[in-house]
Image 1 (cartoon, helix red, strand yellow):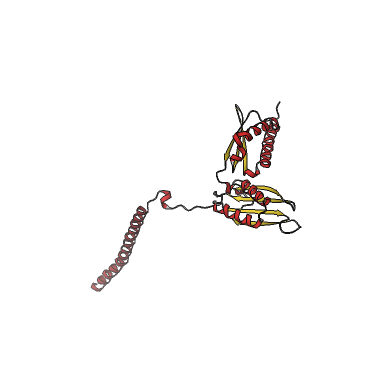
Image 2 (cartoon, helix red, strand yellow):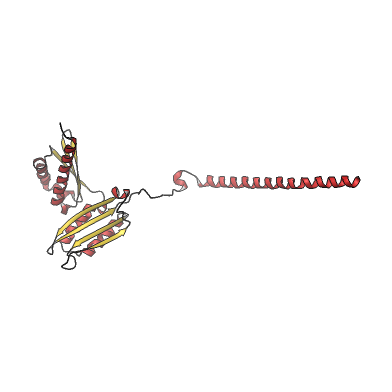
Amino acid sequence: MVNIKRYFIEKNMSVVKVDEYLAKQFYRAGYAGVDVYRTPLGTRVVIRAERPAFIIGRRGQTIKTLSNVFENYFGLENPQITVMPVENPDLNARVVAFRLAVSLERGFHFRKLAFAALRRIMAAGAAGAEIIISGKITSERARYEKFRAGKIYKTGEQATYIVDKAVAHALLKPGIYGVKVIIVKPERTKDSIIIKSPEEIGINKESTAKEKEQKEEMGEQISTQAQESSSQQVLQPQEESTEEKGEGETQ
């Protein structure tokens, strides 16, 4: 009998191994992630990257080598590879982290790179972003610097579905630099409150104004009627008292 728990663990482990292999081989192409689907014809592998042409290769040569690697080393049956571009690379933490790592290897200053990346992330519409660069960045002793902008969720339910995290490494002469990127996507959180306008709900301002006027008129009429009734009640006992006085005088 097949152990169901072991089957799914092994399946997910193969996906993780494929992801780590692609991240190591194509981090310069802006690798963003991979999805593996089981189909009746075989296994469909969808690779997302900032520069898909770098992964496809000349006349699809890289795709052919990847299919052989997936089938022989990772045990994927009849892999069918599809390479897709990332919709918004500046909101993908993995793309930004690999981009920073490549720029650090080219010799750019880390503060300049971090501030430029923050500006691009916030301009793309992110709610917040945080970049941590660690290593021998300013001296022989390892340290880290943190760059932050906007609102960042570290805990809670919203941190599980709107926060994207990624880690990349850059090899330089002083040693290995670590780059950690946290991006808060522009999505609605559980505790956010949105006040809708009357037009969004479907209420016409003119009709509401007329209703208000009618209510005010009704209120004025009711108030005047109440005042008249109260004045009549006050006048009746006075008239009765004058009549009693007249009867007493006649007697």
